Length: 120
Image (cartoon, rainbow, N blue to C red; front, side, top):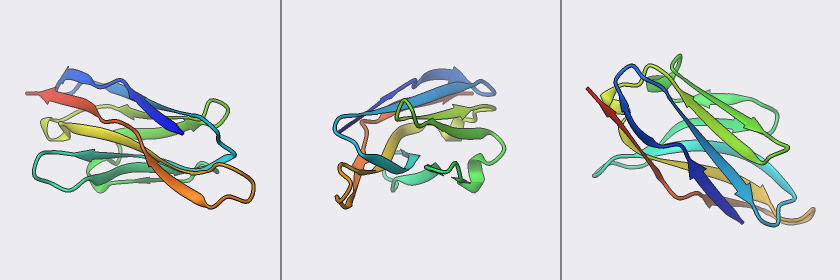
């Protein structure tokens, strides 16, 4: 199972970026998917998460600015980031909780990080 993230880059404050993360490999079902971010010297923190049924959860710092969504047919999760601020600068990681078979236990996977830099 692999998670591959795309969409990071450099953007000015107030701008927008859209991150995507595709899950590939032997998958039976995906329970939850999400995005975390990390800056040097700090712990990785939850940005947003979404269940298979579409229930979402956001960090207070991004509510009203970021939107998480998923395409279950494509095993892909998205993060639309609007009104970006310099403090949003971080490496963003996607994650997914996956079952590889009908009787398998759930396993957690991380994608590689993608850097988002917001300039003043």
